[in-house]
Amino acid sequence: MKNSNRTYRFRLAAGIILTAAVVFCGCSQRGDVVLIDATDTVEAVTAEESSEIPEAQALPERDTLWVHVCGAVVQEGVYELPAGSRCVDAVEAAGGFAEDADRSALNLALPVSDGEQIRVLTQEEAATGQAMSEVVSDSRVNINTAGKDELMTLPGIGASRADAILEYREQHGGFEDIEEIMQVPGIKEHSFEKLRENIKVGIENGEQGFSSG
Image (cartoon, rainbow, N blue to C red; front, side, top):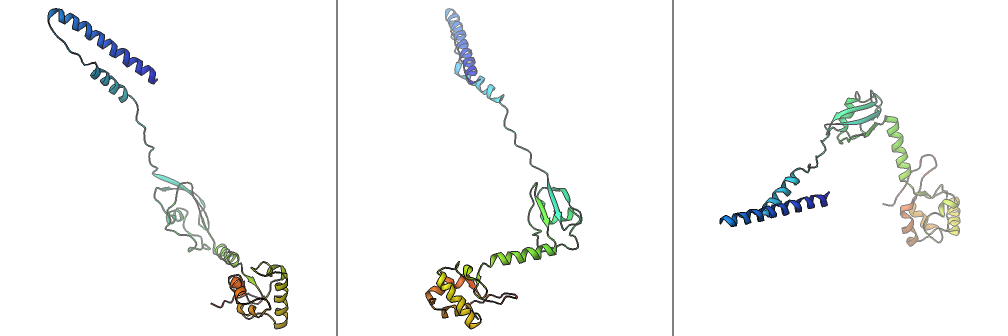
């Protein structure tokens, strides 16, 4: 396409120059001089061609968006909302919170996006999720209940020191705080510093972690 346009312009310019030469020769016989600027003509043609190229059209902005609201709301479903809506608008579109909804589990001020799913948790779901999160986040080893294999997962604790911990625990009825582990043969202050963030003490019916601060 570009080559054909160039050829066309070249031929047009050549034709104009040839015509100008003929006119010039004819006029020179009569004593008249006529000057024609072929460059301006070619540039005019180029400008005309470029104006015919369509400009890229910008995509229209969305005026609305669609969201899926589910969970503890009055009416689950897919709702059309105005652009710029927030979670509170989505919940209101679904009829509001259900009676068993945990209203604090969802940030109502968050903006929503097209195609997003918004799930409102029940109070039971929120409580269960929080409990599971707390269990997962606390990965410390309870030195009052852990077996030999679990004790050996601790830094610096091999088979012999794990046996020593079990023996001390049996003789003294368990550890009252985590610092007491330094009373176990082979575990001194330097070893304790490696264990401090990885151990806890407690009882089997509802563990409680104790820390020296």
